[in-house]
View 1 (cartoon, rainbow, N blue to C red):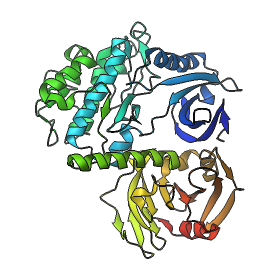
View 2 (view 1 turned 90 degrees about the vertical axis):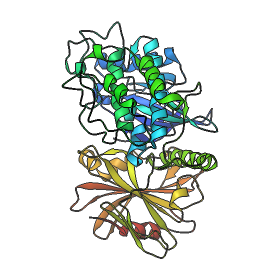
View 3 (view 1 turned 60 degrees about the vertical axis):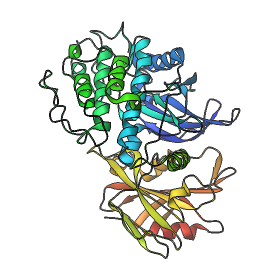
Length: 479
């Protein structure tokens, strides 16, 4: 797949994600000097009138509701080949899935976040709309000014008006979050299906063992004696989550607003959602003091937005399993199967590749290296590199095809070159840019023996040439 240079009036920066029915590109609006997300119907569905209508219904629905808790639609259009696209607000803070992959969210923040999500879904329910696919990947964050972020409900591609959500409703949803009745095409799907999804999100956020099977699934009348909550979560929350995830719809809360009220009753103001809809960022391992929390929120927000904008990494979090030196002096650093040789003066931090998941459902490994890896994403003056390993990507495309998805619309590319380093054949594309980082180098390879694609994005130090890039690539090893 080759990245388009433009979609309508927008310059295309890179691919943000690929789903079953659509691709999402990061675009730049020169008139407003702002980034947008452009959702384009996938080619293989472009001639299916039912899917086209569902695609446009989502955009119309979001435009009609126009609420601060929902992802906003700016406009819709059509490509020269006839495929429709929708221009959406860009969620520069990534998704809840990214943040959960980066590390555990502190319990008070997780409880408050669950309240924010319930408040967002309650907006849909007030307008007679069922989402039907509430998952961590569909909960997004957008910078909302000093002191917090906006929590947004996204991807209504499976949503339908309650009047239509009846016997004609096809099975749709995500296993693990999908209500039991969604397994049956003839069942009536209403707001209680979303209550189930919210309950499963609550278990993922608040349970000590979130992957444990739902104890209420086979016996809807039984309380979840086996549901252990994390430290800091009021014990009464367990009964609320049990009722929300009851097997029979009749045993659940009737809608998201009622579930939200129940959470507030048992946990107090911590689960309430203010009018701004802002929630504290989810990067801290322990609740910090007020001043430290403000500083950390600011740093996390800047770093997340910049990493998403630069490398489609999403949230970057330190992995406890990372080993090796974090000092300068040409040492190596290892995290999971990845090892890198550090240039003099550089250090590294383990991470996960946001949005990249293996066949086991686990996030795929990555790392960041730089003279200051914690600041690299947010500071365009710092050189550095992102290294990611993905078996899932290797199964669907080649290194050259993957790099074609990673174009930089406002930069000038040099001709693609190949270089063989330490027995690995790399495809390399270098860009010169007028704004931000002056040079960005994209490189990818299929690593021998690992059946995985290795992706390395580099912002080289000033006054270095391709030899620096080749030396860095030669130091990337996979176990």
